[in-house]
Length: 435
Image (cartoon, rainbow, N blue to C red):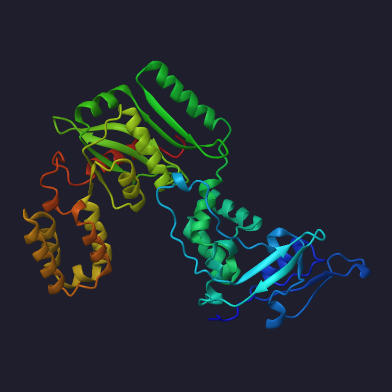
């Protein structure tokens, strides 16, 4: 089956790479042909041809390209590491015969030697091509704008939306929000003040000299800049050895100018007093950062993992916990669930006064799973919420928040991360942006 025609880039082989790239970005879906008018002696004078016809956009045998980047199309080959890969990506190829073969044997230019355009599957529409990995790239000008936005504290989503509007739509921007986040993650945009790194290391070394049992760990990025820091002193480690069966972990507190989360591992002792097991300063809240943190925490605590951990509804954290601490019972903070319910079900709360009572009953009041499921379904029917997406997602992780599933799990009488948040309120009084 032959799919619909899609635009294929036609290149003028005498132009410079930079000129073509800039013109192609500024003209969107139209293809342009830029030639220098050397006879007039003005480098700024250019001649832009009108949009090419469909026939001119189709590759032809004998067509030549200046660079491999302009000619090559990626093909997924056999990975030599297959024997080490636990879960390979699903194969999505259809055995399509469509191909574009390039050769550069005769001269220094790339020449089309074979082209088959018939496909055995439908082609994606032109308004989706910008989502393909091979079509996405962060240009140098966009990278500068991303770095500037990060330095002045503009959130990534707001900055990406602004750049998208400036480009005239997401299909013209050249990258997606995930590319934006990956760029910030892989390339530190924050220029640390002179002495910051040395000051942190000096402080940690001093603490270790004063306390031989003081534990600290630092993770750096590809530029050898500090990203994540964890530390725990002798008392914290001793307390964890005695009372580390249940841990509260919350990253809600941010104090520095870039919003880096300061997180505490908090527990409770035999007098029901809050105690701290460790502290961390994270660069971001990604799965990779959390995996490093949980591995480091386990190493600091002599390989002992908690029986139960209470957190908020953070997807990246949940993924890291399932990967690094699969035997630990992961419970969700009920207070955060109420907060999220008030946001996602605000209309139901305001319209039905009894909904809050019925919702709380599903969380607290049952000892048998059958009773809980029956009451939950009755609540959905009573308030016509059978098709509510948020409740459907919440129900899919019911084992983490409904107390009927946690009766046999030791939680030290804790059902929320309130102890961590109480510690955060103390941090606000003693930590400022310059600390």
